[in-house]
Length: 279
Image (cartoon, rainbow, N blue to C red; front, side, top):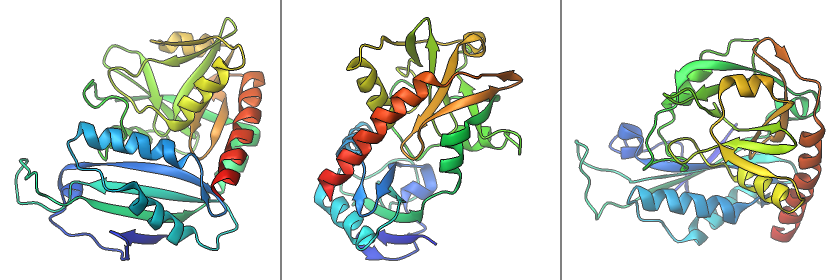
């Protein structure tokens, strides 16, 4: 059962005229919480504010979001998930908007998913999706409410696969339906270039920083499907699972998870430190 605050007030309803509902006119963040601490909250708010700036949506005082989060997490002693949503707010019919519109913020608390521990321990099975990522450099990197690519791609998975990989119109693998992608190639950590499309994940940034601070070469570039299939090791990342090894891609199996475990050990320490600092 989710608990929801809308503009700081307990509610489960939004206006039918809200532009987030009509046009996906907004941004969102999904944040892992340890007890009463939202992990990497400042990094999430940084990305959210950057996305709002790109969409010309006024960004509220950060303390309003922090107050909402603290309200929902008060007394919590278990892991959970906070989802933050910022829309342009209510408006008249049509795409044009008034600069005086008042943004709407939503803070939602959900239970921790059961699959996370299993995925972290045993890895996942993934496939390539036919659905392509929409290419738009102006929106690249941000986490807007327009996620129809992921919705359609997720419908392709079926019961045999946990995650699906999406490519752009040129065949470059960009991201998973809910994750960023890393491969190990010739000792280097390689992740797709997101300058034209895709979401720049908070965990993706953490992993790149971990690699750079531990003498692991990092490359950000285009990755073709064949290179992904032929790589030594593949893992995905997002704010909930951290890093999770891919044990199967299509019919190809992978037995190496050395880099994934190394990254996760350091990542888990960072998560713990951030949660303790915020407590």
